[in-house]
Image (cartoon, rainbow, N blue to C red; front, side):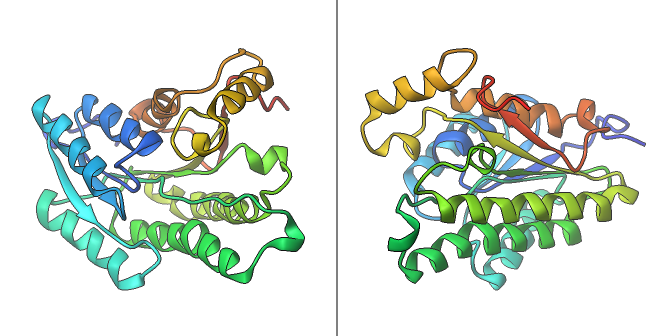
Length: 252
């Protein structure tokens, strides 16, 4: 059996961080593929509402869910609300994440706790509940970062927390494979989003373009297209992988 065997059932995707940047692009891309989208957000309420409205205006199905992914009961309630609204969960895209730049010796423990709570603990709990709730032949995609391969200065917390995500991904892929469920991570390179361009946007764009073999900065749509491929039936034989989507910034 595969996800294409019953086209009468609308598949449902859960996406965290769906109000801005890469998360929003993923929501819109999967909606174009015919999936109903449960748009999860924490703080970007206006952006998340706009994501839902855009999907609905195009004739798609979407729902809006505020969730604190660092709180166990909130994560459990999120999945329960999605199933109450849509009846099932077929794909989970763990996109929500945060990052700080600070030299290792200057990192306060408050930054450590906040970063690991969101990126590692939050993704772990979303993956755990996905394992409990997702349909057979489902898809889990965790958004990591190319920084786990580049190890840039000042990003120890972001890199460390996302390496935990990649570890979860690989173990969970083995555990869920007997159910036909794939679990992968997508690692974006430098991407033109508000999260990246919070500082000197022009300088960062030039740096990102120079670092990529294809000589441009990535777009949220570049990342969303890769996620859509993994979520589709074409991704059925790909699991436990960390896919670098970065225009050739990391080539190994």
